[in-house]
Image 1 (tube, rainbow, N blue to C red):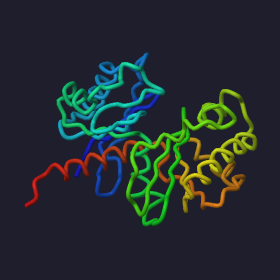
Image 2 (image 1 turned 120 degrees about the horizontal axis):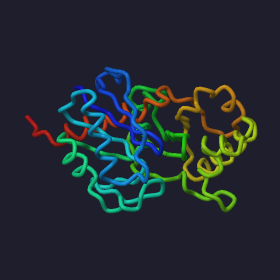
Image 3 (image 1 turned 45 degrees about the vertical axis):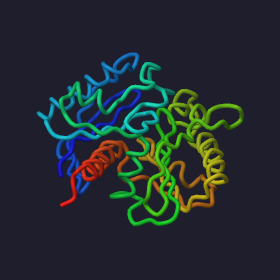
Length: 252
């Protein structure tokens, strides 16, 4: 099945058609800057522009940087507060004219890694941490997702973790790889003491430099670099939409 996957981020919204049987992008991803203010209607219109770029009329899967429960946005840490309570599936479907399924962006990235990436075939507890503007988390037990975990917002040293250990924090504070790895390690140790994962998969664009910081981490769990990096959200959103479509389809 071919589904348009879209990954909504703090600075950019990107998408591409995905072959959900292989996890392969069927065209180069197309990116549009996130509209200033990150308000509902303008962001939905950007998703529509991405669909038009690919002359897309089929289903769309969207990874979104917030808690999405039963199709409704329930948090707004890094987006406009006007998103709170918005039925996002309905909004994007209305604007784009395409059936749309939306889930948390880190959950989408985690799904891609579990189905086709570093977590493929892994049992037990797998923690996926996406490192970018913030810190996203996804937890899987024997391949099953616990949706909408928001452990990037736990406090460490009286500060939200993502404000200390995200890739954005590394860049803004001009931290060395060693110093930043120490902050990331402290964060991962905190999660490990709460969740006891067997495997931790680290994702996001920064992971292309994984050899500069993963060897410095001291957590007990096995730590792996993600396979998909910046494409994870696109692939995972498409996979989630495929699952949604199958649940909606009548049996037989």
